[in-house]
Image (cartoon, rainbow, N blue to C red; front, side, top):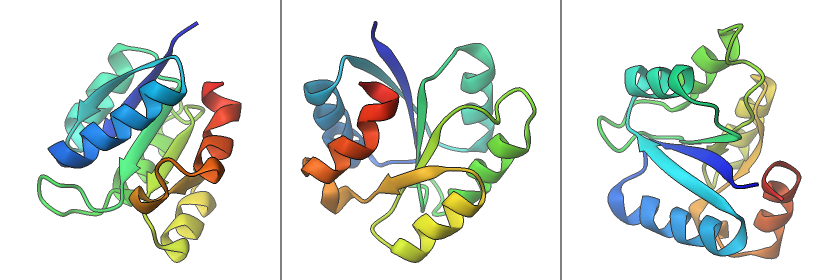
Length: 123
């Protein structure tokens, strides 16, 4: 059964790269949002198997961890798996402390380790 992924806050080229990697690796569809309001609306309107949040949102360079925090504080959304997209381990650590799965950076796309992180959720 195809998995449904929400990509939050990535620019067009990064979204395209992430989408290409995911759809070539897993049976999935991907939607995109750009900020807190449209992300929460999307999550309330459909079931997603995974939310990928850019650490710095392309739209206004705000911190994606705030979207993660709002998802995990919401009783209806908190069980949705979320990963932060960042190359910096300290930001991955902060995301995990808030309830996210350990994510990956854009530099790690296509690596076997990234596929292994996603396999339990998307495989």
